[in-house]
Image (cartoon, rainbow, N blue to C red; front, side, top):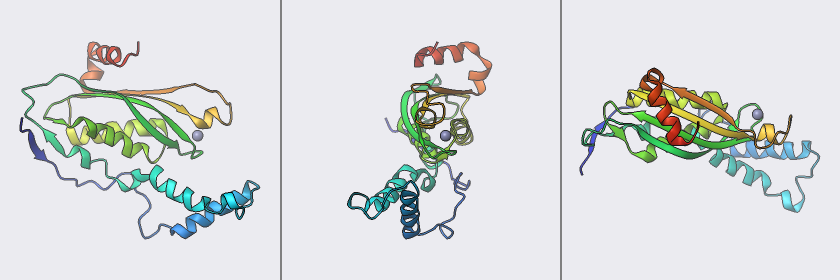
Length: 211
Ligand SMILES: [Zn+2]
């Protein structure tokens, strides 16, 4: 089946990129900041086990926050129109994501379930997961994360409706503050036909196993 049809152009700036390359501190600056934090918690950054920690920390941050270097529009640019007239729901269930809360820079992570009704072609399934990952790998609130994913899919694919449910455990709740373990925070957004048609919304919830 040969299927690739359109390529849309990205005329939007990368969302969430507020720090330009110019203004970014150097890697050395970042490592020095980590050493300061290590000292601040009462540790000795020069002891053997911690000597390379600032470098490792900064390297890990590059990976954990790689979403700032990615444009979420890109994976959605290639759409497939030759799907034998398929217009029913496309659903991705149990997409794992890892993010960090913008208030404490502590992880929150969980699963996303996303579905849409195509109007003008579909995207490769892994691409939706890429979009979720790009936004998740930034400093976030779960609410903003949910809204940003919806927004970019709406703008780029213009589907007849999108359903997105995200469930996550926030380590800033489990490890500090109220210290409630195993609490999951659920955010849900429905647009278009999912919002208008309760049976479509119910079907989605049944398929992802939420009642
Ligand atoms: Zn937090």
